[in-house]
Every structure is written in structure tokens, then in C-alpha cells.
Length: 239
Image (cartoon, rainbow, N blue to C red; front, side, top):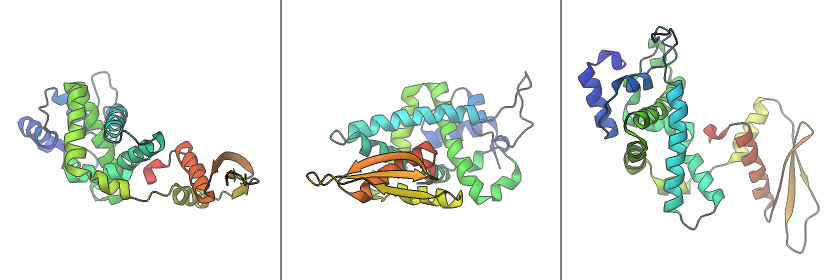
């Protein structure tokens, strides 16, 4: 497996078919599908070549395009809704699934044993998808990268209505993290404002105050605290 098994023309054709974008600088796309486990891939100055830098770039491009799509599609929704929808789209589980549907894993150049590691493959696939977006951006510009995201990823593989109906529980993800890391979580309720029926909830972790939220619903206030905690701990990929 891997692009090394394809001829140059065959690899170019594969990239064109799966992205809808005609690639020009093929070296960038080969880098996009080179995993860090292939330590023998080095440039002329002896630096290791893999897709991690392209992944970093592609992640930023993806965030920008998704933000624009959501901003235009939901003109009357607030920032909280838009942020949550973006999280649902770009989380690691979703990106791994998209990479699988696109067939990106068969193009990966990486250690043979990784192809049988189902847990690792999801992360590798998602990273490769972001790296591919970065490669398209460098090769053909923002407009082409945006077209790939909006027409191929969102247009063909993402069901926006299904994503909107998903129930995302930040609290469940955060509590799982707390249990795994043996953290003590304590919720403290301040005196309610009876006139407005508000609940002020404070989250304490191992006795340290992390966040405080005010909401008509105590459950919602706790969820908002957990959402902030998930972002602080970079747990959004587990949603």
C-alpha cells in the first residue's frame, strides 16, 4: 500500500479523482501522504519529511472554510451554535470517517503494521485529510481548497441536518477525562436569583475553581462549564 506503489501518472489521477482538483506540484501531495513512521524519508538537507506541517496548515484552512460555510448557511444562529456545529464537523472521529470514505488510507506511505491498527488508522486518516487540504492550498490556492471542502467533503459526505440533530455532551466527555485522570469534580451552586430564576454554577477540580456559568437551567450551566473545560484540555476531538 501507499503512493510509492503507484506510478507518477496514476498517483496524479488518484488525487484528481478524489479531490476534483487537478494537482500540479506532485511533491506536495506525496508529502501529504507521508506518515512520520517512515523515518527514511529525508530532504536534501537531511530533515525528515512527513505530513505534520501540512496537517497544521490544512487544519487552519479547514477551520476557516467551515466557519464561512456555517456563517452563511445559518444567518440567524448565535456564536455558540456556530462553534458547536464546527466542532461536530471537524472532530477527529468525523475526520477519520471522511478519510476512510475518500480512500485516503490506501495512499499512505507508513509502516506496514499501522495498516492493521484500526485505532491508529482513524487518527492517521484524519491527519492525512488535513494535510491534503494544506497541499491543495499550497498547490492551487485558497479557492480550490475551499471548493474541495465545500463540494466534496460537505457536498458529498457530510449530512448537515444529521449533524444538527446530534446530541453532543461535553459533560460526558469531560467526566470521562476526570475519571481516567483521577480528578475530583465538585459543583457549587450559588444562591439563585429568584426574580430571574438564574442558577450560578461553579466547577471545581481538585478544589481549584475552573469555571462559573449562569443559566436558567442548572444542567445547561454545568454543560457550559464542561464545554469550556473540554476546549481548555483539547478534548473536542472526542465528541
